[in-house]
Length: 482
Image (spheres, rainbow, N blue to C red):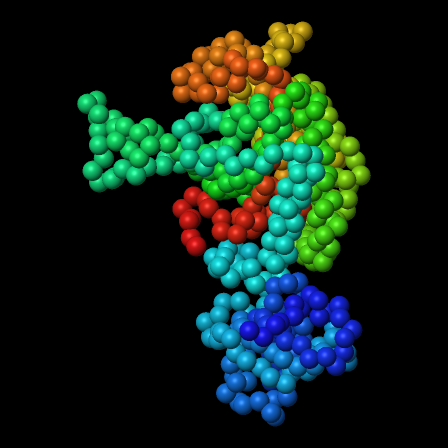
């Protein structure tokens, strides 16, 4: 096969008059002479100039938007504006035709809603070329961060019999025949006849299994798909998404907060250093979008300024109790502008409250700690009651501008008696999690961990506004296309 050169390399080349071959997809074809070609290696196109007098008319008709072609010719210095080099083609071959009457991506601006309907083709747009290059960089940076720190990467199960969050919003996994479902004597589904011999689900978190590994390796992380059967159609929720979940033995809540802040700054810096072209494009795109909004809704920072700002500032750390005090006396609460008014300690903070703390009050990322025990999961370490007798747990949430909660974590409850009592109080059967409780029976130790929803990180770094636009093929209520 002919060796091809990547467009990103040719655009930087000064090896003029050498013969090169490029292969890619036609973006535009003007005047039967100028082809804008892109091969996905970068966002920029290279101009291929053809001599229409020496090419068959039938071939010229097939050079249409979306068609895949191969072009061979001399690399020359460009005389036109907008590019430094171009290819003076001697031969052009059509590798794959594209019917111009049917190809949905024409050289014009398309709405993100429309592009979601053709998610199999949206990668070919500049916006999604940029988004998914940044996504790749962030995923690579996550692995690099933990590898440099000596963490062990664990693959935790996708199919599980446990509900780590206790929320019950899980997708069932079964091989039973729905038209002929086996039943017990009392009419319930007989899961003993199912593939695994018991009821199983798609996982909502790899945390519980991650804790088991941390009790042997000291520090591990997971990075895999998780699933929530929550009937939510917001711009921040997906039914299938990816989670990063480190678990660290001999670490307390302070250690946990520091690890999370270090990780966030590391991966943001990696993206800034390695995705300059993509982030500059997304920065311009966001600025254009901002111009369409009323003045009071426009962002204070550009995308690049927001990312730099997160690197330059230490994250603000405060307790839930302190946050409630701030929110109760805030103008939006006093003037009843919050949809959910804060009137008492114990309220579960909503996105509007989290964003107020980050965007209006502190104007930087915030780490909230020590939440009421009643609104947090069973596995979080129980603090001693405060001066007013209120029960809290050693939990932490990291809040980011434009997003709200980015990371949720805690010091885990390592004391068997405290953990089992909490499970009993919440009606969580101990026999179903016997293996989890064993880590508290055999060499228990203080340990901590957190979960980062990867798509929320990508959403923040790219400046996109809908989480469905930062995962290749989004899964959400009533949609499992592609």
